[in-house]
Amino acid sequence: MNSDFNIENFYYNFSCNCNKVQKKTFSKGQIITTYIQKRNQLCILLRGNADLVRYDLNGNRTIVEHLSKNALFGEVFYKVTTNNELLVEAKSKCTVLFYIYNQLKEPCTHGCEFHNTLVEHLPELILDKITELNTRIELLTQRTTRDKLLMYFSLISTRKLSKTFELPLSLTDLADYLSVDRSAMMRELKLLKEDKMVDKIGNRIILLYE
Amino acid sequence: MNSDFNIENFYYNFSCNCNKVQKKTFSKGQIITTYIQKRNQLCILLRGNADLVRYDLNGNRTIVEHLSKNALFGEVFYKVTTNNELLVEAKSKCTVLFYIYNQLKEPCTHGCEFHNTLVEHLPELILDKITELNTRIELLTQRTTRDKLLMYFSLISTRKLSKTFELPLSLTDLADYLSVDRSAMMRELKLLKEDKMVDKIGNRIILLYE
DNA sequence: TTTTTTCTGTTGCATAAGCTACATATTATG
DNA sequence: CATAATATGTAGCTTATGCAACAGAAAAAA
Image 1 (cartoon, each protein chain N blue to C red):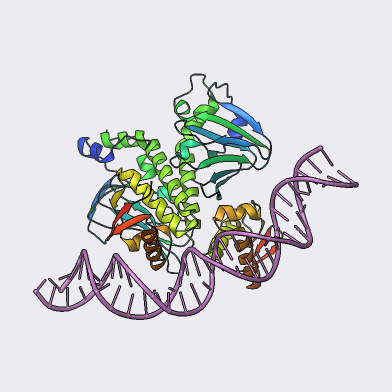
Image 2: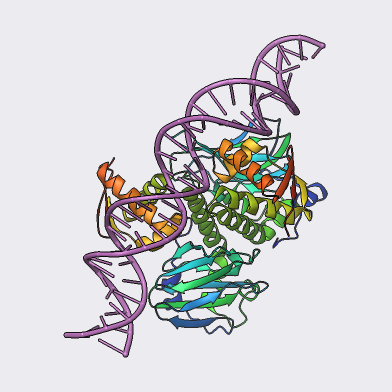
């Protein structure tokens, strides 16, 4: 992480009487937002988990990003160029702040501490986003399903500081995230178990290699 | 593009007596930079073409990004997390500016117009970068070689405003960019020709569909 | 120019991965 | 609690893709 700025902490400790932000709550399964051209939304996930999902013309579903607490999303980060549908779906109860980027980047006339602090930290936050995207690209350029799985596990393992962890995504969603067929992924998981590379109890993964 | 800020124009028209920047020239085939941890370089390609290339432990070569005039690169945009090698290779004669991000983001004490203008436009430039990365992810999440090729062609076609265009990468490099085997890609190109989807004369592509 | 190197184009073979289908387990919901 | 809905786990079959190998074309270097 470039940034040590914890959005959620700031939000609850700093005043915000800003008229440029909307705060909404969503329950599991609801659509938080649909990406549309021209609008330039910047959203902050204060609480919960959500997925940025793309549906293409062939009916394939791809989880473009898995968003957790403090994640930023919205059209600022993803210009709609193709005619694919881009949705953000709540995976649990979510609290979200909505800004329009052009309004956000101007200093707040209401002396809103949160708004101004956010703008100040925006470059770091955006650079963090870039790092995530590059990690995602590294994952997707893995040539085989096995390599994708191993790299994904390794990332989570590093993040959790443990060789044992619960998957943050369902296996179905993981397949959509790695952009592979689910049943083929399940088969590869079984082979990884047979090869004593990983162990797997339900959605709990144990890495067995060094 | 978010930004209408043309870096190269600004560089040649504005004063820059900055001690925080290095300008270097490279000839084809030379290594412009190697990504290393901790340093936080931000580089600008003023002239030429270059590739950001990753070599993984299996010996696979991946073109992470194809950089052309006015492109930004460097560790700011790609934190070195895995132990893969990341290099930027000049594909033609290149002129490059090198900054260290932490120095760049402070206002210039030398009253350097270019430096200060650059900082001012940095958010837009970084957002452009994000858009590119998302496009790359969209490309890599295409499930088949055929879909990757068609999407890539469609992107170039849109950029060039023409259904006919010369590939900006060699076919060998294109395979590394799409993260597929070269011979398999060649085979798929032949099938696309047979299906009258595209025509191909050497490295010139003609899209035949609507 | 000649020589060397790199790139393009093609093939046969082996295998990874997609697709379909279904049974069971787990999790939501009335 | 019962029932519906969704997720996990597995198998057979088919196809796409990777790999190895090589010939000819094009580009770079001597």
